[in-house]
Amino acid sequence: MREPDFSRGLLPAIIQDAATHGVLMLGYMNEEAYRRTQETGYVTLYSRRRQALWVKGETSGHYLKVVEIHIDCDGDSILVRAIPAGPTCHLGSYSCFAEDGDLLGSFLGHLWRIIEVRAAESSAASYTYRLLSAGVPRIAQKVGEEAVETLIAALSQSKERLSEEAADLLYHLWVLLYASGVQLSDVEAVLRRRHERRP
Image (cartoon, rainbow, N blue to C red; front, side, top):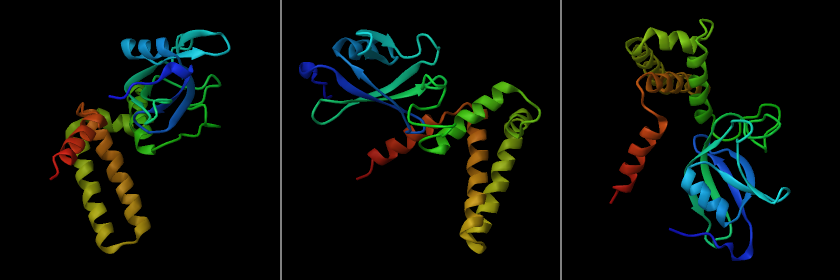
C-alpha cells in the first residue's frame, strides 16, 4: 500500500462520499491527522487557520466515517472515501461544493439514504414508509411487477418509457434490499468479487 509523503508538509485530503462518489470537501492532513484518521475511523484534519488538529463533525455531530483511504501515485495527496452523518458543509449543504440542496454524485447512492430517512420518519404520507410497512413479500411483489413492466418497455416502447420503468424497478429493488437488511455495499462486494475472478 502506498504511503503519503509528508516531507513537504501538509497534504490535501479530498473527502468523497463512499455511496454517491460525490466530493464532499477538501481539507489538509499532516502526519498526525492521517494517523488519527486511520486509528479512529473518522476523518481528522489539520486546520491551517487554528494550527491544530480537528475531527470533522466534532461540534456539529456530522462526522465522516472512513470507508477506505487511497494515496495518489506521487504520495502527495490523499483520497478518503467516507460515509457522512449529515451535511458536510458548515453552511448546511451536503457538500462544500454544492449549492441550494444539490446532491452531487450518483443519485442512486442518495436514493438509499432517502429510503433510510423515510423509514426513520415513520410518516404514513410517505409511499416508501407505507411500502416498508407492508413487508418484504409485498415489496418483492412490486419488484416483480416493475421487472415485467421494464421488460415490456424494453421490447416495445420508447427509450424514455424504458428509462421510467427502469427507475421504478431500481427504486423498488432498493427498498427490497433495505427491508431485507442487505446494504448496497454488500451487492457491490459480490460484483467486485465476480469481476476479480474473471480470467
